[in-house]
Length: 200
Image (tube, rainbow, N blue to C red; front, side, top):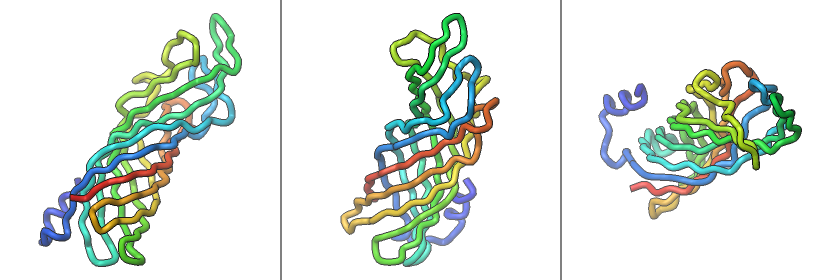
């Protein structure tokens, strides 16, 4: 909202403002954090493939710098081998976790040469839903409103290339700074994004 207010308050020429769409694939994970209720996790999570899609707004500050804000839906998560403690004790069960986020990354982009850029900035995320499922087993979801942290704050860095016809390709690494689980301090999002987009 602050970035939007600054952009609106500035006297900008129309050719400096761009809007577009982008989407792509995620390779996501969460850093390990111990146990969640009766679920005892391993000491190493595995990456999970997902996707992201959304809208882009960009303002070119100068030939070398630009600001960009995205509004994205992002499907993330991880896979793990866990032990379940309860009426039946299960060891090394496959555990598939899927998280659905609405994210707002704000990037400062630097163009060292024409069309090629490097970028970095903060990202705010809001958790829409999160579910963990054991492979081949009927089980309760260990993640709920009393377990999840809904707000996620991250930083990211990346690079990309803009083609003259409006298309662009981009890669970002997103590093979560806030925990995703209330009672387990070690869970933080890690996400590698590969995107393709088009600016109108």
